[in-house]
Length: 230
Image (cartoon, rainbow, N blue to C red; front, side, top):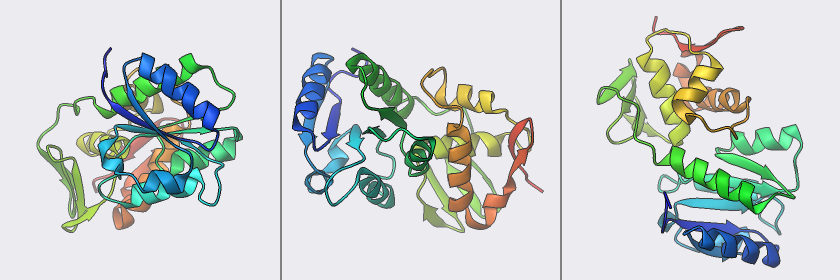
């Protein structure tokens, strides 16, 4: 198996579902732990996991809240997250993606679908960076390609792997407009499970994180996105 022995954490208050997912994912070669609440999951060393499957509707601390906490911590800011939830409205999906989730699977789902999506997210998360110089940037905004680190005026900013890849692509393009399909192809490669709005959600999130440089990501209506240098 491509990602054999990678560690997954399933967080869901439905114990039967946790055990079904653990059984099937272990059959695929993964090492799987389970937690029956966000509180229990947050007490573990999350840096030891390669991906988290996270339910939204749980007890006192929701999956959305746990995801916010993961993204706020430097050591887990880029930990891949897949939401598993019965909430499947468009607003919920966009909320999940805007929190930095890598995918969103609505219940009920097939085990095969979960396995395919887990594999797709791990493939993206472990893919080598696109061929680029060691550093790219614009004025006080700098990306260290080797260390996968971003700074504004030498202060670190926390970007997910997907956000980092999109930003590096746009900056390296030096004003070139990239269509949504090009961004999907270059950053997500050929993952058929990525939603069309995922690019837009990531761009919106990037603009907020980039502070004064957020306005440099320009929307060319009907064409796509570019990073305006001057």
